[in-house]
Image (cartoon, rainbow, N blue to C red; front, side, top):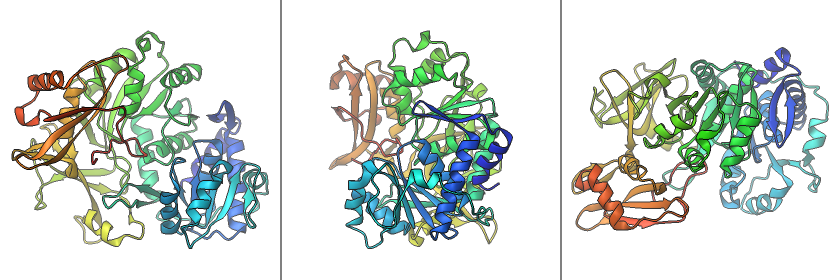
Length: 504
């Protein structure tokens, strides 16, 4: 199915049903579909051709949702950009994508001006707000109140749907290219294993610029469910209020979000009987969180999953396996083949550590305008005409075929001739009641090669010192895994997708 058809079909089936709740306002499927159609017509009338890129530089909002589906209906390619993206990075995205249009809020006018000062390429703007001053630019309100005169673009499933920019090892963002088929394959499988239906109310506090967040929107529109869209998750009690107020049946989280929720001392006293499931992806769930989440959400199914932008999703762990395999992210989702390889391309068996390789219709087409980067991760598959994704993620597989994440290949610490997974050390640190968040990484050391360093954020009004941390780690870790350096910090640096930045 083409992605824009998700909204169109739900609008036909459930025209007056609430599709989206955002900023305290409810929007029906019919309303969103009509606005997306008008947005699409504006793009087509003003020269958008099939495959042209449209940057959507908006916070999570109804306008962002309309722009996403309108762009796709017009045959364009969405480039959803985090609203906190600074001018220098935005300039790179404008130039690299050669976007035809940029949808923005008037609050971002100065950031866009600074970005364009660095660019030779200047897209046409669609501005959310009242101040539209440049010739050729348009008011978002006027656009969505216009006519829906044009027919949807003539697309097939292998046409380009999205470019999602992710942080690159060189410091420059990498544009992950995804077709309608790539995205639909994942959305269909996710909706199947989560058993999503039109009865669901899904809470999304993740940014739509992030693949995990975008999937919440797409699965909702595909199944006719209702999406409660939040701008972020900085205030955990507000999320609890939304879950209860809207009788949310499912929500997607990441370790940082769960760490914030678990700080609420009354969490296990709330009534979450309507909450059917929660999911975790983006980063591995700390083991210490699992019993606390099960206590707080006793009636809720917890799904641990793995994914990366280049394939969106790879695995899920059925909730009934959680107690038996708390370190696993499960098996491959439907229509995806996974295996583990060593550095020589040999497939590995149970208990051996190797790189996860992904084969399936979810695998990206490549990095936009980066054939060299693409050639490093998309390698020949079983058939001469196909390529498979080498993820850079180290895994093991157990005797029953369940996958267990070890570390990113470029994050493994080599200390005293041994390999240390940051995740293993972090799981131990998070077992200390005083620790809110932490990150572990290697720093150069003339004797050890790399020293294991731990940065720790303490919970409010709690205290620890370096000796206590090391003593606790010695009880739970081999000596070479115990951090040689412990530093207490105010915050842990993260990517725009919420993942910990392990390279200082």
